[in-house]
Image (cartoon, rainbow, N blue to C red):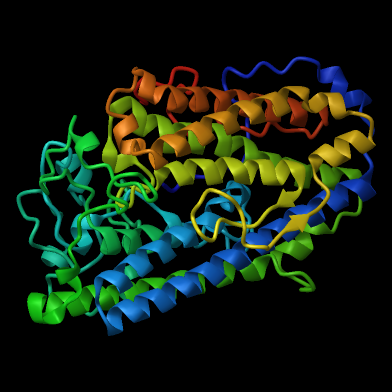
Length: 480
């Protein structure tokens, strides 16, 4: 879900920041502050590099599927997609600061994030879908778009035959899928990870193939690695076999190829902004500081990514909206039932930025980072210790532990057969307790991040209150 940045970061409502005098007495060390910035940049480069590597592996898997559609090549493509999400999920903390993911010139909000990771998807604009009690116009309807589908007019559940795959005269190329997230409600998303996800998995329907899934998702749970059906939606292999589906099978395969090529190109553009040794890219400007004021501004940028992702985007937009309304469509990875990993990885990315370490990504989907790509650097924990202010982080470390306990419990539930779309069916029940607890701990984590920024006398508060309309201290309350 794309999230608007604001020019001025203001205090998050409900955050009490006492002890302003702490910031006045804290003495910074500019040389050591620059070490934090260098590490932050090193981790960004490593994560985006791993995202490119895994996206290229996904491209190879899609090529194999296109050349020989089979159960084996389709499953391999799905697994490659899941692995590709592992490094990228940890990159989300680099948003909300006009870094290369959100800006091409580090001034305007014109970055490629919307082409890479925007959601919810405009699946009804891409391919066939089925309407039902969990999939009405509010989920499947496309109020506006910039394609030739349906003569450029909106799509409703009463007209679901109009889509890109089914409209044979529409050429599937990069210019087509670049018309993504142009509608105000963003239900016209056409590109990025989630477009590929939908084309590989299809809708996550119930066991009978019906879209009447409300209260019935536990009969069709399909998280990867679960004890039951280890796959997401029920898209059949026949959707990719030309002799069974005429031209539409070839068009799905072509769409996958175009989408993964664009994804790689977009990721490479972000990676370039973080590359060391360049004279005029974002990294060069971000890591070079000449005085304390500039260093403090850069610290504030990092903490803004950490604080706003924690409370507004992850706790609110990615968790509470789905939980409080039992909305499968508002899951981040709703087609593959991979939302439990999105939660884990986003939270892990915040920890990476604080501790100055990156342990790589999970290459075999067993829940352990094992890729061998590591950054062991100098983080905020090291900096606060070196300037004699380690106690400032006591509260944050406790909340990190609470959040980690929560996302690990959510991940465990999914692997045991209760993915997020099942958990959210009864928001107040015991099964949903880890979701509720994690939303609250992420809220409190953001409070502690804001307190550290205040104590460091950074001159700004780093949690954007407009990032979400959710009251993340009350997880089952519907968001305005």
